Length: 55
Picture 1 (cartoon, rainbow, N blue to C red):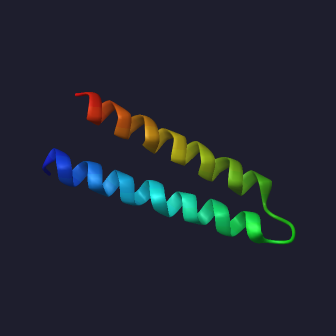
Picture 2 (cartoon, rainbow, N blue to C red):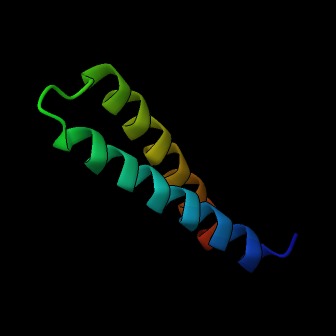
């Protein structure tokens, strides 16, 4: 997979996680554990994206 395609896929996943976090936070009683897991996944993707962009 080309680097640009890989970065595009990572950015897409990052956006999806952001949407899931916002959706969960809209609930009257948001699942804090789920939000924490999603945020950790999002941070991991952000770090991967930064790594590939600096390469």
